[in-house]
Amino acid sequence: MRTPRLLATLACTAALAVTASACSGATRPAGAAAGSYTVTPLSPPAKGGLPRITWSLYAEPYTLDYAQAYDYPPNTVLANVCEQLLRVTPELKVEPGLAVKWTNPDPLVWVYTLRSGVTFHDGTVMTADDVVASLRRQMDPATGSPWGSAFKNVKAVEKTGPLEVTLRLTKPDVLLNELMAASPGTVESAAFLAKAGKEYGVPGGKVNCTGPYALDTWQQGESITLKKHARYWDKKLTPKTDTVRFTFVEDPAARTNTFLSGTADGGYMVPSSSFAQLRATTKGKLYFGPNTATSNLAVLDFKGTLGDLKVRKALSMALDRQNIIKAAAGGIGIPAKAPTARGAWALLPERTEGYFKELDEPVYDVAGAKRLVEEAGATGKKITLVTSTLAPEISVVANAVQAAGRQIGLDVKLKAVAPEAYSSIFVDPNARKGLDLVITSGYDNTPDPLEFYQYLRTGDFGNYGNWSDPVYDSAFDRANAAADPGARSDLTQELQRIAMRELPIIPIYEAPYSVFLGSRVTGAPAGIAQLYYPWAATIGAAN
Image (cartoon, rainbow, N blue to C red):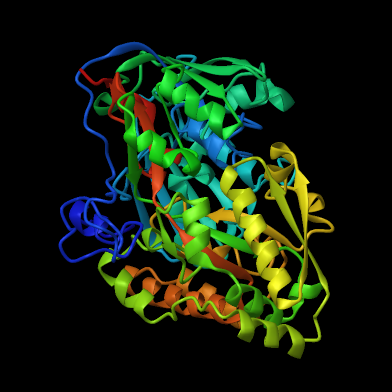
């Protein structure tokens, strides 16, 4: 498990390079004007309860099946409904969840002691059988879970006591344990899974987990409603609000208007095009929180034009990252030096700046990039970049990449797809056919940067372009076998160096997480930990 760390230490390496004077639980980027913005894990605590809140999502979840939840909208809802064996806190620590403790008696065994007296939403009591069924379902090829590769080294999931589950491995895998704080560690009722079958987690269907809220209704195309779970086990997170209703607004301007009009009480991942407007309003407050995500260009086809490293380097050199940040992130962010954000390095945050100082600053050199394209014999060759209205920054970055390609002799074609088709690219290999590049928000679900770098391992589900490097794979195995956090962190830095040398992913910028809270509510965590932490339980009345 991770070593404990103070909130102030975490904040000083959370999402951005920070000034030495910014270590008071909030941060700002190096070189930014004083007071420009701060990064903090939490909004002020609630002062009372509320009967109901409305929460805005930028898209409707495509599922509420924990084994298929692989994107922001479904995880934002499920964070309040389903729980994991371990829990990631808003400060990016890992603590006990449905497991009260875990041990690693030898490198090939993880043992989880379960919490007693936990009830599912239907009133039945959680047992080891439920945990075994939930984890085995992730491993079953018939489930088709994008999280299946997390269990690549697991040979058995066994009930070894009424409240004990043991995972037996084929090789050491520290990351597997950490992912028990994310979707792979989710626990659902075994009986409910068997009864629901293919109707599990679909619109109109139900789920039956242990979280502070239960799924009440899902009216497809309109809303999802959650109701307070009266028998929730964690008294520290007893919901302050009785009912949470999620609405789906894809258009950024319309979504901003829901905040300003009070139609929605709040929402995560606020449109960056509205940052200035929402920071100036008296209708609520925009918060920036710790983020493990970086905006990247992921290569989807290494047999095409981008199979040549010189072309990948050229495209990276041609990107005007400062102007992209102004246009795509509302000026809130910094150029990315690596595919992982500084906030993803929360395993040992005191080492983060040292690691990033070793990396070169992104180079903006159009003339040099054009020469590389010519040397590669790639002048005039086509690159297809997928774009979408899913988020305004996607279109902004896509246009910037197209313009950069034109300057250096590459023919970057933009292929626009619907929001749901864009999301499919990350879970369906068939959706990637004919595409060379996709704009991603690559993020960690846990505080360990090794989690991100597993997705570049040969054969991993998240390795969208099927990139393969035996040196990288060997380095990953060494890191994943390192139980000592310091050794693992240093070995992960070696993976980062290889990734930057070979550029299977081209980093663009990193920015803090965002949440808008209307004037009547407060208490929400501000950072990306909301994807698994039951964030709605802490929201209540501001006055």
